[in-house]
Image (cartoon, rainbow, N blue to C red; front, side, top):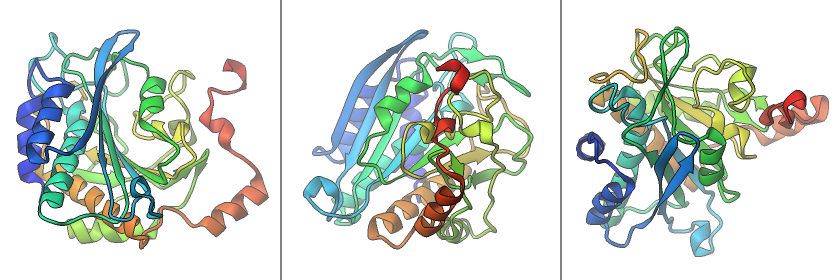
Length: 314
């Protein structure tokens, strides 16, 4: 369970004075030796604090081992939409889950439980992001460009990525809880990982849910195409397989809505991500079938042009 970590983190970031240092202080209270980086990232509409937490594995690459590294990314525009809205907004749930996961993993290490592979957790902390027009309901905007965040969060050592994001402002997903995407890799939308479906149904006790994904959803922001949200934007900046973890609702809820976060749903998403990290580092879980990916590339060629802004906008 991650309810404690979620509530503790919520109390820190539900503030007009929330920043990366306050979050880092909270995590260091759990484990003083925690490897945490906090630094400002300045964009066209302001700035935000990048937060990165490295959780070394027993046989992870950081210790010279060979266990694969997973990235757990908390995606969002901002934690708040001040001064238009007072308080924590629904869009912040990706960051909240990421912080709670860092706190849980650090607490596990204090108790002698270490994962095999390294886990790299990243999000950003901004209490006063702008809003942006979007249909059917307004988006939360961001003070920085998505490409900037991608550059900061996605590094060559990542072997797979889970990207968690509030995904409530649409009519595609219409049940409360969370849903996962098919695996996205180098411009291809691949079949959904059976291993991830297994973990999802075990951690939730329910049938797994997979959300519909379109080709334009996995293209970069800035090409004037509709995107369901930023959940698959990491897939535009890495060769690693990426799966979206969408926090969902039955009804359409704006990202700038306050009082619209549900701790039980966030706990389910966080537990799924934690169990995925355990299994991936151990080598018992795959995001995609390597042979199938080689086959589809040999038949249809590279699709990495979908990771760019396109021929007319280069």
